[in-house]
Length: 155
Image 1 (cartoon, rainbow, N blue to C red):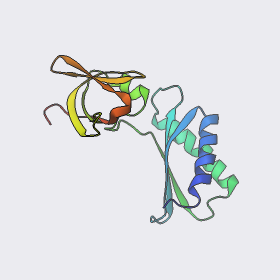
Image 2 (cartoon, rainbow, N blue to C red; image 1 turned 90 degrees about the vertical axis):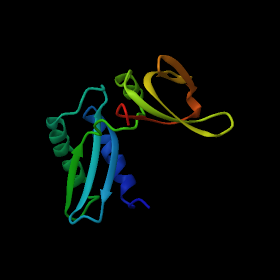
Image 3 (cartoon, one colour; image 1 turned 120 degrees about the vertical axis):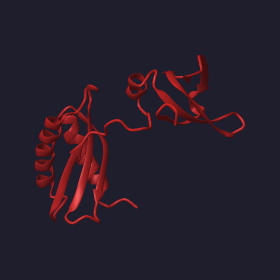
């Protein structure tokens, strides 16, 4: 169950991020840490990479907004980062960036049976995901795709 403050913290962080040209990718409140830790992941709305200076600058602005809001009344640590490159592809930018890379695709067929395919990411459009399996393009309806993950060749 999420912490009761998390929705309010998320709204505040989204607002501040938007004003600074970022979008909020993830937020976690780690209450088992002492002091508690607020982890925030941001991405530029322009799609450009987030660097250390971006994180430091956003940390200052968000820190001030948190202090003004008085939502966190006890001591806390604020950690700002970018989501980096994860294994799972989700947004359009991921699919454009990793075109031609090896992927594992988990999908369900029309009989609702789950399958896993390996190949090179070819394209994702509004209707389907296409992967290259040994020189042949396999098209999978997008609504049947469960997950697409980057993989290392030979694994």
